Length: 65
Ligand code: SF4
Image (cartoon, rainbow, N blue to C red; front, side):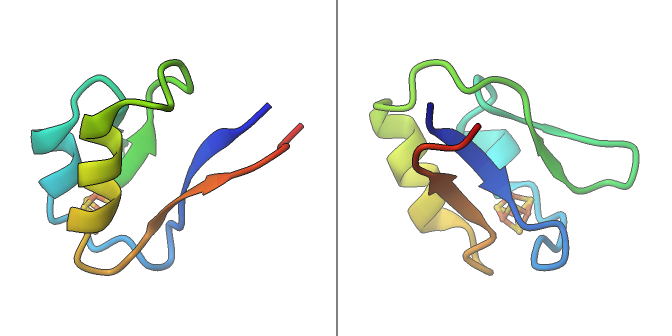
């Protein structure tokens, strides 16, 4: 199963992903992005969001556990 990964060391908490794709992203208690769900990974909005992240912190890990 594939899953979304947010690199917590790269995320700067800019909020772009949360703003664009609230289906998949939310802020955690550290003010950084965390993944809400790994459903609907083919979403165009998700692709847009991955491209929009200014630090390239978001990736999709294939065949994750
Ligand atoms: S767009 Fe990137 S840097 Fe901004 S909050 Fe989301 S994961 Fe973090």
